[in-house]
Image (cartoon, rainbow, N blue to C red; front, side, top):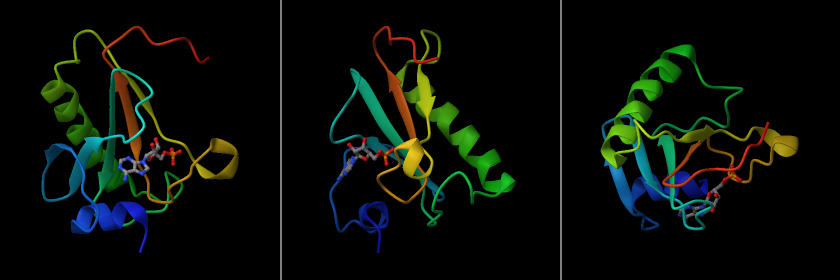
Length: 108
Ligand code: AMP
């Protein structure tokens, strides 16, 4: 079982920000910004390459709720999903990094 599936099952503790039947948002253990939250579906999907458009639609609404819960919707935030080896994906369970709480440096 993958690391994030263990977190979903409660076998590894997490600091939950928001949760519903389909998704979990929790604090990244090694934050890269003042606010760094990971958002994952509870069903295992390897990466963005495999996510269905239906699940993508639902996770979009959930991510927007997470941003509202964190109070960062107005000031802004960055959303990242790493895909595969060249994309720097370490955990093979799709996750969106939500980074916020400060002015982030330009990436592109
Ligand atoms: P990625 O490199 O896109 O696969 O991101 C994996 C992320 O998972 C990294 O930012 C890690 O800091 C984070 N991470 C790894 N283990 C844990 C954990 N137990 N709880 C919270 N975040 C974790």
